[in-house]
Image (cartoon, rainbow, N blue to C red; front, side, top):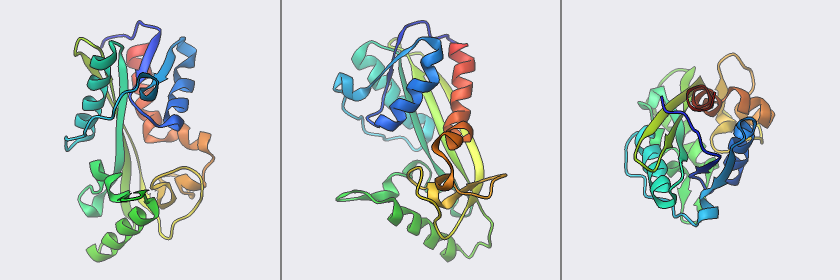
Amino acid sequence: MRKFVGDTLLVATHNEGKLEEISALLAPFGVSVIGAAAKNLAEPEETEDSFVGNARIKAHAAARATGLPALSDDSGLEIDALDGAPGVYTADWAQTPNGRDFFMAMTKAHDKLVESGTARPWTARFCCTLVLAWPDGHDEVFPGTIDGQITWPMRGDQGHGYDPIFTPDGHEVTFAEMDRWEKNKLSHRANAFAKLVKGCFD
């Protein structure tokens, strides 16, 4: 396992919320975090059919373009009764000509579950794969998951994406009903980050 030894990490995202979250997680290690926008990086096309494949595309493209170690993640929701869909197409299900509509995407997931005839509970998991890539082509991979079930109707106005229909195992509330920091402590991304920190920063 290669350790991170620099003082600046590029995070291959244009999402300011994600950047803020990662900065806070890595602050104890004295690492300065910058986002893709600060380097005017375009988002590469995600052409793989797996979370690790798409995360690798983004991390390696950013590392090559900047000469800095780059961290990327790819994440999504897998619903068992839909054979793991939407999976890597989680964001695509929300895509419209006017941007992303997650209300539409959640409704689509529910409608497909009803069509499938599968009885509740509708088991599912959020997945996150982190890839830390270096300019020489080396990378380290850290997958994280959290299991739960699909809840209907939607509940809560916190969080983002499919959070209003996902209730994690051991909890009575959806991700969208949780305090943001509470969710961040147990999420799929937190699970992957714990492995990243242990592997490359501790």
